[in-house]
Image (cartoon, rainbow, N blue to C red; front, side, top):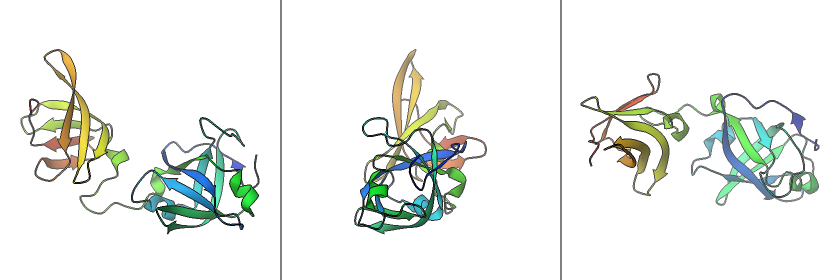
Length: 187
């Protein structure tokens, strides 16, 4: 195990939120490539869980816990420092590591705001009670976010996309695992 890394188990609610891109400076800081345009989870959690890159340089195996001292926005990404990552060499050894953060460490979303990860897997039903599918992913089109699901139509599976905007989305019930929409299967 590398300096600063402690072997750990991945929390059951862990979400992959980014990768360590490279070392930053000479004092052990490292650059992070966040998967979200709003990387608040990096700032709210002081424990990050790392797994080695699927390809390329592997300087450790298994799951490691990294105790974060500070994380902040820098340019188009995030930079961070950890308690036991003392210099550039230690930081370079983390290059490519996948970063996971416990979902319970994410900041609380504001009213009518949702983390995409919480919407994936929800059942989508229209006002008439017709099941439209289960959210398999979300897309950002710039102007809006779009729910993407597979829907059975005429005996075939087709991809159905619904803009995730108030005019079409009536209710998101996270506890009930359901999204109610004003949408028809043949739109």
